[in-house]
Amino acid sequence: MNNEQKKNNEDLEILRKISKSPDLSQRELSKELGFSLGKLNYCLKSLQKKGLIKINNFKKNKKKINYLYALTPKGISKKTVLTINFLKKKMKEYDELILEEQTNIRKDKNLSKEVEKMGIGHNSYPFNEVIEENKSRTKPLFKTIAVNIKRRTVIVDDVLSTYKDKPIPSWIELSIIDVCNRSCSFCPKSDPKVAPNTYQKMQMNLITKLTKELKEINYKGSVVLCGYGEPMLHKDISLICKKLSEASFVEVVTNGDTLNSKQINSLFTNNVNKLLISMYDGKHQIEKFEKMIKESDVPKDFVILRDRWYDEKKDYGLKLTNRTGTISIGDQEEIGKYKKCFYPSYQFLIDWNGDIFLCPQDWQRRVTMGNMMQEHIFDIWTNKVMTKFRKNLINGKRIESPCTLCNAEGTVLGKNHALAWSKIYS
Image (cartoon, rainbow, N blue to C red; front, side, top):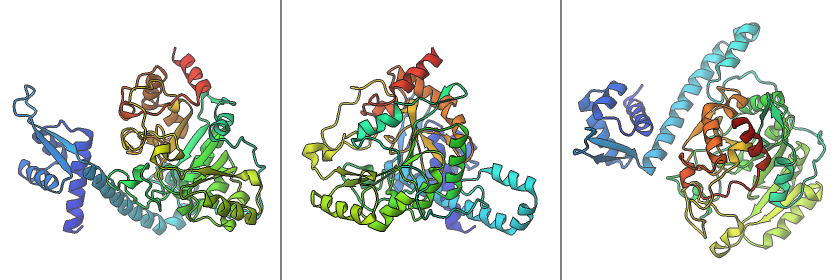
């Protein structure tokens, strides 16, 4: 390990500790990190100089906590980059070790099962089935209403499914790639300090595991490819859609910038149920996309064109939210206007690496519910953390971060799910 790698690893450890426990004393911090006080003090001043942390002095504090450390937005971004680089290095080492031993592993069924159980990152099992794109569609098109809320109501509220006597989600958002080719002012991606493009993408291993577990709980809802990036930038999107369609309805939400008639046909052929194109540039895009749809030879109701070209005066054609205190542009609702929220009662979001978040509002990805490469999705859905948030929000208590900063109206969908959970908790 060279000096730069060693320094990056030390910086990452300090940033992680401060993120988890900002009120640790310098002595406690040095003990947990295994650093001398002198070395820690040097490192902290270096991080402060780079603008990655803030150090607040409280010498008169009765609890004798002299300092309170906090990550700056730049520090949060740097921590993410360092974490990703660290994981990439470890995953590469893991893959190299597996490849060295792959012949022995393939021969021994018990070894293969052990490797599958390991769940290291999103590359946990390199011996997956080979998936090929469809030559023709193999799943009938489920007819839904075109209007966004009504269309989702059919999927979310009309059918309440259970597993082990617990309501299961009916809407799962999948962030398959962490990069977008646009920088819209109403989107957190416009600020690289908050939502930097990391160019990380979801691997088929994760998709295969998710599909398997959705089948196990007899999932009846939709999986929607959108999240924190532009899904059409993922080169394996058609294969991802085909695999997911084995266990769910699949929708793709895109800005349409990279689309052509061949890609639209490929999505349809690989069992996507709805393709939603958000048009940001103007009315002239309608003619462009209608021509593209016609040339793609897909059913007209397979594609939904959404007008999103309005300016700030018309809220960009969206129902604007502050993304849990991340953006303030446009005519925003006051924080505190809405109390109850049903998001965790009927849905969640999965990031590229398998991290599960409460909902798509949490753009800073503050609180993970768990990681699906290490646990079954149903176990995460019913774990203590998810249960705490769900209970509080059903009862109108937005008292935990990131919900305290959220201004989204969270009761438009999911009423049946929230009622079912209320009965369980009462």
